[in-house]
Amino acid sequence: MDAPKPPKPNLLRRSIAGIFIDLQGLPVSLKILTIAGYLAVFGLLFFTLLVELTGDRLPMVEYSLVEPTMKVPLVVMAIAGLAFILGWAYLLTGASAARARIFLPVLVLFALQLFMVTSLLGFFLELLFLIAVLIIYGLTFRTPFWYDLPGLYFFGWLGAVSVIVLLSVGTSATNSEVAGALSTNFTMVMLLTLVFWVLLGFSTIDLGIKTGRFFTRIARKFLPFPTFSALIVFVLVIHPAVSLLVVWLSREPFSSPDLVISILLIPSALVVWITRRWSASTAAVFLALSLAAPVVSVGLYMAFAGKDFTELLLKMTGLFPPTLLFVGLTTYNLFGMGVVFTSVNGRILPKRARLLLYFGTLLLVVACMLFMTNEHIAETNLVSQDFQELSNSLFAVSAFFLGIPYVVWMIWKRRELLIGPEKDSSGPPRWAWLGRVPGSAWIVLSLILACACACVLGGILLWLAYPRS
Image (cartoon, rainbow, N blue to C red; front, side, top):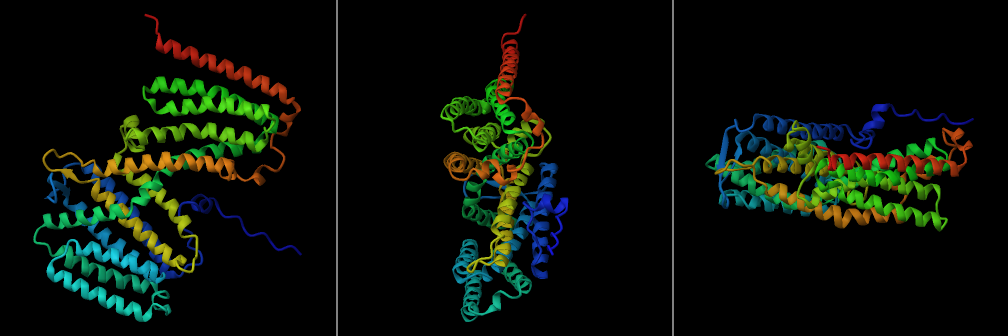
């Protein structure tokens, strides 16, 4: 007797499976900490929106580390400081549940951050605290002491971190000193999380790939191979004309790389056709690349031009606060990384440790962005661009030097990442009746339609370029 098939996940579970962490099988305390982590991050994003909408009406705190003098909203300083404490509590709880090679470096980084901005009395108290932690850890790290009760240890670390941070930062004489201390700490956090800004350069590449793969898989499921090949011929021929028209209408060169790619794809497809290597998977690669090229090209242009998606969307719509979009898009990408990172249960870094480390890092990164993107130059009241320039530079490096080789590697070794698994297209196409028309007829028809559409687009371009008086 055949075993019953497991029930198919509902639509909501399928929709969030790639974004949010699956809580099934986790201890109750870890489920609570995971939900609390998500709520804390979403709360920071919502608070960022509120700060953006209030503009310059919030009370400011001026501080000076180096020239020029900076200022930051008082409420931003307070919320970012609380998120800093919460992030380190998650990080230390997760690190203590891992092996010593993970816990000790995290503890050292925490100590370095605090020692940079503490008083003499605070220094000795922090040193005493760290020595006590190391002694307890040295006596218990081979036992399940740090692993079995993550919820209890989280509140222990939360209390300890709160006291230590208050001794180091909160006892400062003025708000200006507190803001300066937080700025120093967040500068270090920003340096420690440079790897995230590099990884974010893949967001444009991944978005383009997902777009191309989505439509390619749909076309392969519905169309027989001759019709599918004709569709690719149509897309390849019409693509350069569309790109050229978009470049002219936008008055921005962001589609220029797309135009170059679309032109190069045509002779490449001809070579594959002439050498008789044209197959369903090869044809799908050309379609996916043609559909992904516009998205990837926009990202590459913005990387080298020092722009990001938030600037483009703000320029196009005038509706969206750039800070919110910057934080939101960045956090969305970090969510995706978190699902992959926390899906592994390793010996050195078990899953429950990964969950807490992930949320700790995420909270620190978002708090850092909240603080840095609200820093104003006191003299001009303009937002400091140091944070934006650093992220744009790292985005450009990762998008070009890592993203392009990544796409080439997928084409060469892992085509299923570009066009989807072959088993998804192994069955008969939905519109098999289209196969009654000969393949050569489909090719001729697609060429005629593509050339006609290209001529129409060319005529529109000439009419726009040389309007009649």
